[in-house]
View (cartoon, rainbow, N blue to C red):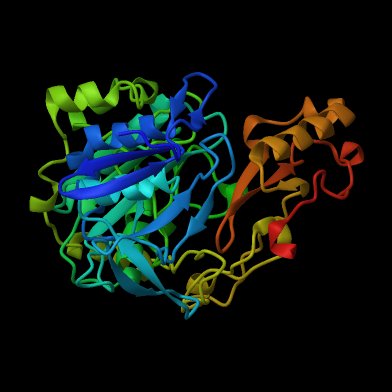
Length: 434
């Protein structure tokens, strides 16, 4: 029912949900979709979307002005929430706590979508046990110029590995350029142990397909598809199944059966196509909760790595330094570094070459940062012509409540006498300095 206050009131499973400004444009480039269209999309796939978030605390990533504007993260539950929504209190590595929403039904789902949450970002824990994840998340993140075919090949290698250690992986498109493989596990390991298992998995896949996959944290050391083990650190979230992504075609994160992976196209799964697919085949991940497995096999791989001198890998910057962790400094900023795990067996030091990186742009808007990159290329056309695709590093920097973009250029393929100096980034809008 439409009211005079530009509000659409929906009755959902016994709850009344108000959709404010229902006709506000959320997508307007390749497709035209309103806020109400996004709410209706989620209601059409609610059983599947809820399977990924039910009984889990959720971070609100809010696109209050639509998918084509910047988003911000909100951990704390809004104070003016309906009485039928529940919360739990999470603690974070920083020592802070937050009361976060838990969404259990379609009405709650519609309520957070009305806040601008077109993506769903649940934590990998259930509300009854916030310290022991029941999901290991394998995030396949392709680097610049890496094609979808390589992402699929790495995903199939992940499938083979997790099955060898007695686990079952559930693949889905990320809704962007990558793929996720979620693994349901028994909730008896800490976040640190789950991350350790994910790191061992990443390194094992890299050894199997070294030309395609990388477990290296620093972008300047990566190639191919990065297996982001740090998505399993506490306080990290990824978009869950059926999440709408802020791309011009309104594509979504699509759960897949493994026999679909080899020839799927992420562009086929959008807000406009997914409801029909869901109606016809249901949720390919409907049985995930029944597939609990043990991390013992992956942790055995971690033990083998450590016995061979492979210690911990870098954590995200806001985490405390971990015991055995490699130096938390990018190679381009380090004149040399000591491999501590090797030093346990040998007093020799391994030097790391310093990459010639310069910062080009910093901005809350990726579009604005990319425009700054183009200005730099126009200023130095001879240098730009020498850059490889993966010499341009686009970093998504996460602050407390927002994400901003930093663009760097690796001048490794540029002769030293041609290398431009580090100049003031254009733009130079780093939100953390405000």
